[in-house]
Length: 247
Image 1 (cartoon, rainbow, N blue to C red):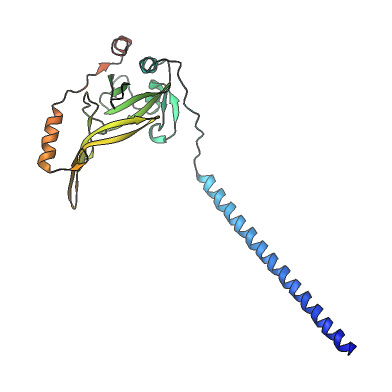
Image 2 (cartoon, helix red, strand yellow):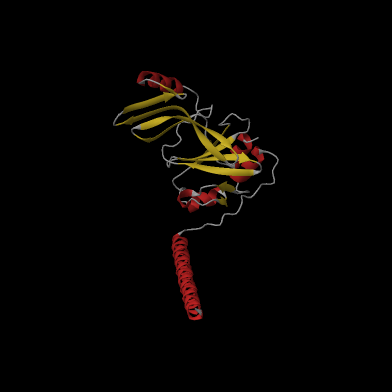
């Protein structure tokens, strides 16, 4: 009887031993799997990081001014920098003077281009904006002042044409899309307000005026009336004109 009990005890101990071994192997396999997953994640992340372009952006420099007009005077005369949230095709924010920006982006050639500017409250909030125009290149830089910072927003070919005194302007990006827009500025950025738009697609034309659907005749009538509005005046970018029209 004692031998039987001893035999049962030995079998039980052997079973416990085998279960312990199996449990240890399972933990090791799980550990190896977790390690492999972690390694794969690290490798994947490293591969992404190695190909990504990370730009360290300094916050915009605030100007020692008491008004938007004073700030615009300083940047137009080269005494202060403009903050470009998306600097040209590089899409990196940077503080630059107006002429440094134009030179770096190869927009401006003093032998063939003339810089002009106008002053207009584009969004009707009581604070004017300044628009710098490059003749012959169809590029406009809208300068917008907000809390001691002058922001510069670039509008390229056909993106801002025939600017009216109410801040609206003509735009198009192809022969199949055009319209009239305004800008709404807020906290260092802007949004488009579509006053009227026309788009031709394979399925037909999509036309709207002040957010409501419109017919082709209604759109043509709107454009004809809008074109009669008074356009902004442009002034040569000189110290004399800066003093005369920014005051």
